[in-house]
Length: 261
Image 1 (tube, rainbow, N blue to C red):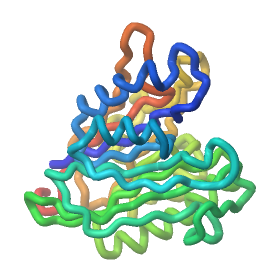
Image 2 (spheres, rainbow, N blue to C red):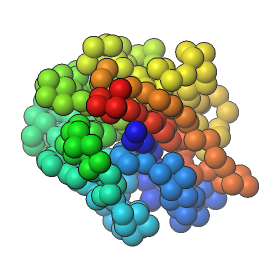
Image 3 (tube, helix red, strand yellow):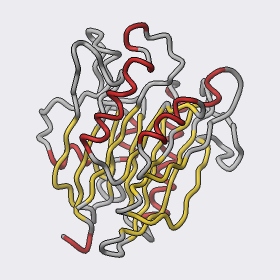
Image 4 (tube, helix red, strand yellow):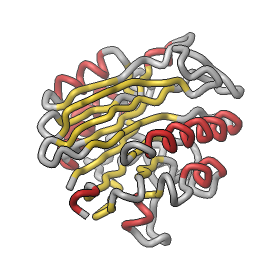
């Protein structure tokens, strides 16, 4: 059994007043430690003091992430992968940009507001020797960019799944009625771990803008190959005296590896 977590931790320079990073960062680490993930995908983690804090607070994880680039203060944002060293050995790792030229750092296409990245690792499970691929990403806000990013990611997932089981997670900036969701969750290459473990009527919203009314949306997903059996899935809605860990709630999924099914 392995545990996977996806968590948009909200970028550290955001002017969030009482919910600013310096106030809630300990709560972010507390929720990660509570989930105890073997594989962790983050979004909006800046390649500055924010990433330094996360790495120092989680010394038992290998951290892989590349700043998305571009102009302005958002250039340092990453969608990094963290791998628990005792559970997995990293075999390969890399990243690509969500664009027509995914190999070019900082590239932007499809009217996207910002460069966007996907970070992946191929890992070997130390106890069993099983290998799999794990990817985290953060889609843009613009509709055309979301659809084309899903198409690009679907191609990556299909190619990779021909060799290895695949786990894809992230903040997709689209809900589960969207074309992007339908494109990725085809039931053959990838399926939605939450909906395997929970009834379709269960509350699957993750984004809440620090509890703002009327904005809740299910835009953070964990998608898995059919060979990975979903044992459990939860959305961590922990709060502490009005303080939120982030403007997103993390999704936590427990999986059985193929050899254990």
